[in-house]
Structures are given as C-alpha cells and as structure tokens.
Length: 149
Image 1: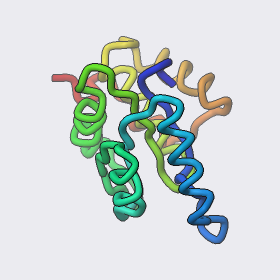
Image 2 (image 1 turned 60 degrees about the vertical axis):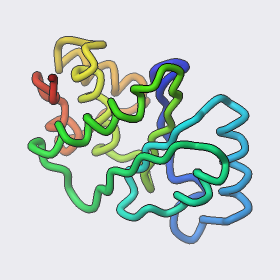
Image 3 (image 1 turned 180 degrees about the vertical axis):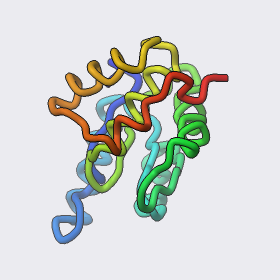
C-alpha cells in the first residue's frame, strides 16, 4: 500500500479450514526475506504472536471483533503510527480477510498520515489500491479528521 513501509494481506497461514502451520511458517520466512520487520494484527485474538516474535518481527495487536465504529478509528490509527514509528519499520497489516473494514481503515490512515488531505480522494485511491469498491462500512471509517493529532 505504501511502498517499502506498509502492506496488507489476509491472515498469515490462511483463514479458517485453510490455515496450515507449515504454510504460516513459510509465509513468515517470506515476510522476513522481503524486509518486513513488524506485524500489525487486526485479528480478534493474538494468534501467531509467538511465531512472529520468534522470527524477530515486532507484533502490534489491535483486536477487532465485530463492526468498527468511526469513534474507534483514532485509537486504531494510533496503533498504525506506533507500528510505523521506528525509522525503517516495514509493517504488514493483516486480518482474517481484507474486508471493507480493513480497506476503510487503510483509507483513513492515508488521511490521518496526511498522505492525502481529502477523504473523497482517499476513498478513491484506496479503492484503486484494493482493486474494488468499498461499501458503506468501510467508507464511514475514512473521515476528514481521521484521528489527526
């Protein structure tokens, strides 16, 4: 999403019945080989935390369970800042699926980080990056203020 700094994917190792320990281990090695040094997990639980840390990756956890409300966005985006704060941090954001919530939060981050000033343009850009339109659940997480501090 932000070249050399921030990327997004589905849960490492697969989701649900597709999850395989060997696949998870291979994907963690792949991440480290590609320069990722932190994982920002949006999973409801702290699954894989030990595996990430054993591989030398920082683990930042923002448990999202259910629908995210716009009032929750500032605290979530503060965790994005925390993950990206150290110079040289390369962060992989993941959740079970790349759904409208994840895409909306990433669009909100574009505004929050002042990479894009206007929420309408941020919505358009994040849809282009995601390769699909986002619904109202995601759009409502991209706000003009997007937790700016």
